Amino acid sequence: MDRGLRAELSPNEETALHRIAAGSDGREIPLAYLTQLAALWLIQSRDGKWELTDFGTLRIAPDRSRRQLQFSS
Image (cartoon, rainbow, N blue to C red; front, side, top):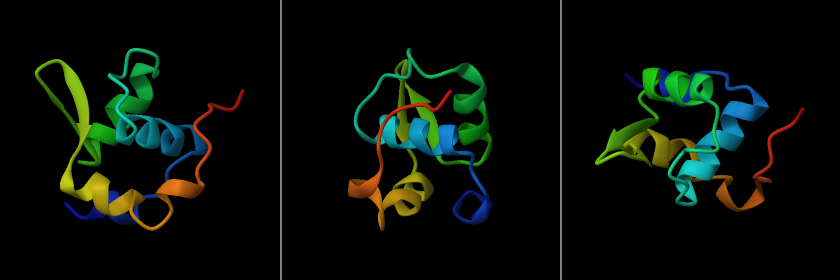
């Protein structure tokens, strides 16, 4: 299950993860990114809202403040 900590994420997946961490409900995030992050156990849906799992929290802890929250084209 710790593969989410080691998995290589695309820049857009990283951005999606950080948006969830910042409190986004996920509506503006493409479903493909949400599905991949959930498969890696980095996020989960609770009461219709996406949130970080413990692995997701660990994944972003070292660099959370340095990331830009924009998807690249």
